[in-house]
Image 1 (cartoon, one colour):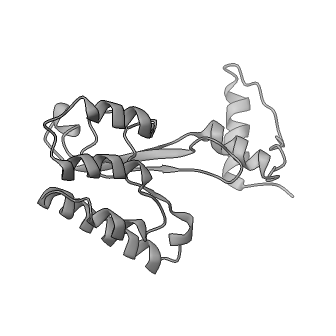
Image 2 (spheres, rainbow, N blue to C red):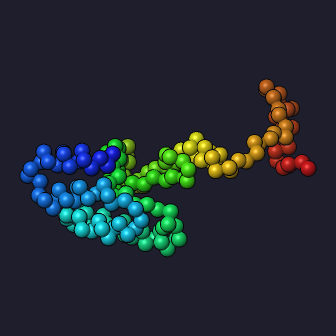
Image 3 (tube, rainbow, N blue to C red):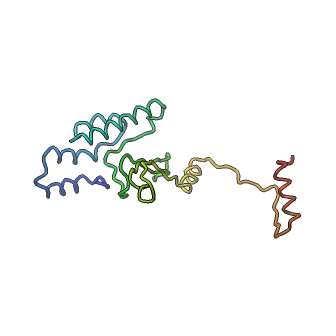
Length: 175
């Protein structure tokens, strides 16, 4: 499922003869449920229980908010996305930049993780890969000038030097 290898998935399902046809169809349909928010309508046909319907309702709420914010055209839904991290308990997400073949940001919902380190607390978290963000900016031609130091100071336990630096910092940049 993680690789969306439909032939392998069909072969695996063939080894599960007791699987109800409706469940088989749902599992085989999931890898194709990727795209804009309209795929959420297609997903309803393969919801097998109240938990799935509730998750779909949550996604539709998110889709409506993204539409309200005017960013829905930048969002792609992938209902077969599988993360290899067991602590996610809900939605997961990834962020990409045009022309870059890997994610810049990833995260998701994890209701049980924080409770392993203290009081339980539902949470959403994310990680931003700064090296990839800088690479994306460079590939898109967004390059800023390197910062330039106005003063270089090696104080080495020189209290007079440190006092001078503190006074200059407090007085702000000198024209």
